Length: 228
Ligand SMILES: C[S@@+](CC[C@H](N)C(=O)[O-])C[C@H]1O[C@@H](n2cnc3c(N)ncnc32)[C@H](O)[C@@H]1O
Image 1 (cartoon, rainbow, N blue to C red):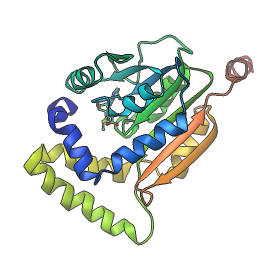
Image 2: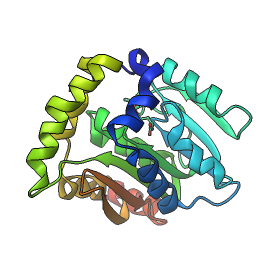
Image 3: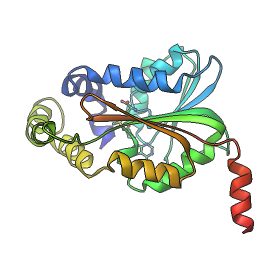
Image 4: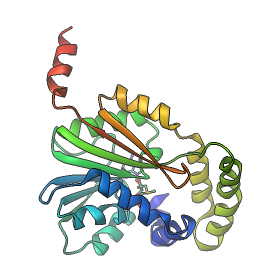
């Protein structure tokens, strides 16, 4: 699906988010606050917009994604920067344990339906003490919820029918409505072993930045559990 919508992906992102997507990715980058020279995995890097802020912080970025066409755009956009695009799956990442100083995943985790499996892989490839920030859509609560639902179900499909692929953007709304609530996602992060979990609501709760850390003592704790 992402191969098919790759060409118009950036345009639709900026249009349908009313330009908010720049702000969301800025918050993600700020929360990770990568140090120059650190190696960061941008999981589900897509067309590379989520990697750009990290590169500007001086990090070296590996962008992993399933979609060849999305990555082709990222490669062209980030040419000459410390960016390496790798095509592969979040469920079986082609990296050794404890490879990365930090990790970001912007609007990717919602598409990984075996979410605990993806989180286990994220945990595995992060170094002990490594931080990650997952940016993802969420359904707002309260008065804004019905309006937002109408936007997802009627406005987005109508616009995308003209500019891109209606069914892909119907999937977008559907997957947002079905994704974990922030408390349920916090519980998943906790169960995957992450600590220092911080959840930041953005744009009336339509997006959350979920930040967390792989604890330094993770290996020994895991080993202890295996022995018991
Ligand atoms: C909505 S795009 C986000 C792209 C980019 N991070 C951004 O902020 O614009 C989601 C990306 O997740 C990728 N993706 C979905 N499932 C995946 C999986 N299991 N493993 C790796 N990438 C996946 C898709 O190919 C797509 O490029």
